[in-house]
Image (cartoon, rainbow, N blue to C red; front, side, top):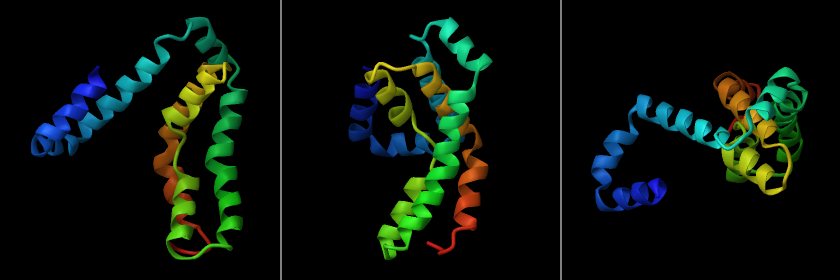
Amino acid sequence: MALAFALALSFLAPARVTVKADSVYLRNAIVATLLFLMALPLPIDAVWRVVRRPGAACLSSFLNMALMPLIAWRLSNLLTGDLFVGLLLAAVVPSTMASASVWTRRAGWNDAVALMATVVTNGICFMVTPFWLLVSPRKP
């Protein structure tokens, strides 16, 4: 219902929504709230198991933030212009709640691991993403 309200508000009063969307505090609050709401239905023991044994979340984060950019570099040799830029950007962004948590939940696997990977990759993306873009063999 909140999403429907936000969508309706953005269509009815786009100028007012744009001013609010520029607020860093509001964006951070929205991300924190969404992460909290994604974790809310998880049993607390599942979350503690992932915190105590973070191997799967670390592997997922490594695949997302290290291996994918390396694979994209190899594939980018086949592309030019906007396609190269799009592939590079898609490969270096952090895991999102939709790609990690929602699809993992739909597959019936451990959503606590997916949520932890989302938190980790979003927490370090301000360092990792610029790094990969800086050391890219071809500049976008």
